[in-house]
Length: 204
Image (cartoon, rainbow, N blue to C red; front, top):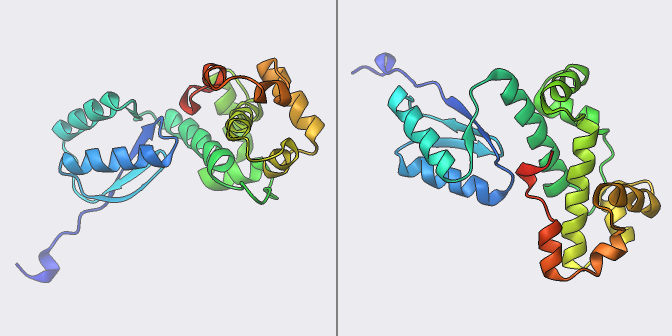
């Protein structure tokens, strides 16, 4: 076969719900490779596969994902909402631990998702029954819980890392969501810490 006759397969994208950490990326990559797929690129919520995907492949992929606590997203609006959530999780839990973020959340989300923030906000609120701003607050509170559990940073350092205007701002927000002040939460036993933690994909 001549080189010009070789058809180059166009990479296909899969959009996946509940991918919230590096471990999720490893699991999805390994499982897809076990199913015989060539994973070209993978990040939170999105996988690019080089080979063609047939209807039977979709069934096996869906089954694998459900077995591991994930879900294939096929609806366009659901993909957009998951992209918003993923961008927030990436920002709050995986970026800007040492240096605070200078870009506005709205600018960051619009840039990552590639859509106008106002339209994203309207869609998100209508489907999730919570605003993007409220979702960000809840994810930040979960991050604060995690950092308090590690006990290697002061509340002031945590407030700085998560771009709160002050320790008081963090404390007020944390208490309004959890019912505890950060200091009270810090004194809880490890078992109680676990009870009050929420899995990132379950935050609403």
